[in-house]
Amino acid sequence: MKFKQLLIYLMFSTQIMAQSFNGEYKSLLTSFKSEIDSTRNYKEKAEFNLLISNEYIVIQDIRLPKKLLIYKCKKPLKKLFNIFIKESCNNEHMENNSKSNITFYNSKNKLNLMISDKESSQVFFNLIKNKLK
Image (tube, rainbow, N blue to C red):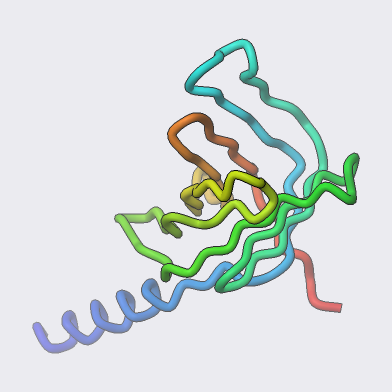
């Protein structure tokens, strides 16, 4: 009996460790929170396209199609309980070469993505994975 429980546990934990978020997504809701100036905080309905790979996360606001937010993540995905984090991603779209953490988490069975640093955080809610064509 204990062997079966151990086998089930190992199968489940291996499946979790192999978690991959690669693909194209869409988000229709975002929020921004500034740790420095709360007057900059907002939550809005807007369409965003997201491309997620093992090394890059690219975000496009369809209202500004040429202004891409590009994050290069060299470190592997870390799991903390039911949260997955990519630490110290380079903000390729910024001149100051700053770093952000990328967090994937589920809330109400919906996948969300949060980009954060010590000054601010932005969440893209309810990611919808685009179907393969």
